[in-house]
Image: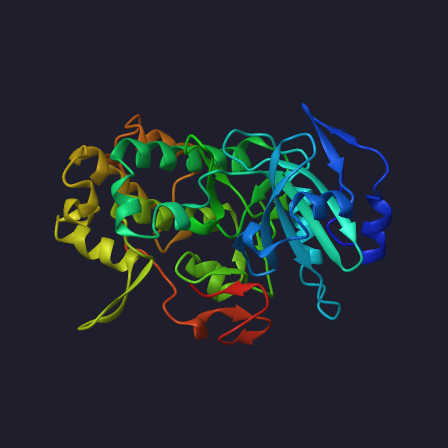
Length: 356
């Protein structure tokens, strides 16, 4: 099923009028009715709400066939068409995408000014909710689990960047957008900001979208978007998973401190191992954990062309490419919202931009 990236509300309603189902690869893409979704969520009861994003809410739903789904509700703002863009972007990005480490889109629904996207339900919510929420959560994430989650996310990005055509730049890789199924297999989710590329061209955006702390400096400041922007975000996330630290933390003496900056400081002092999450209580492979953080630092280098491709990242994580062969240069990061490009100038806020 193919979707146009730019269309009006009425176009969408006509293109996906709820009549028949559409076969998508090895699964059936369903066009749900509003009444089905209302019944599945007990009229979108607050107790069924499992998430909140910049463009809407996510509810847990029980369908008549017994399956459990996640229902994303996107409310359309008529003046700016926010929500509509996310709806079309997700349909376009996921219409042909199939990978173990991507969230699976099951169907959609159009009802008045609202749009609904239906996905497989992820029992363990997001990394933010399940892993970073509290120390007690982090202590349950063994080194083995963190390793497999890191590799799974990387495999999902390899698929998006290098295997599917046109390739996809996600634009908002972060802990909140990585979901975990019942077996803690990671699924890259939330493709509302995704961009499709048919070649290696660079996209220049006049409206930077993403999350402070994960934004690559070249994209945030100049609007220049490539796959390297996702790789930067992955590097930040990798450091986050290994260290258990927030992307931005507040220190009474030093004020705000970015994880990327802290990792660079510890790397130069040859003390990276001290950045590993203390909740692991020493139960980890020191050489491997340090290697993972070095790969993270390679991904967040200020000069985008020095960042490795995601396929190389996996080989480095698996020690198939020796990390010692790669020189790590200074990272870049955006510490001030005033540096973020919006339109022809800079401002401290924008549609589609999300602070931490």
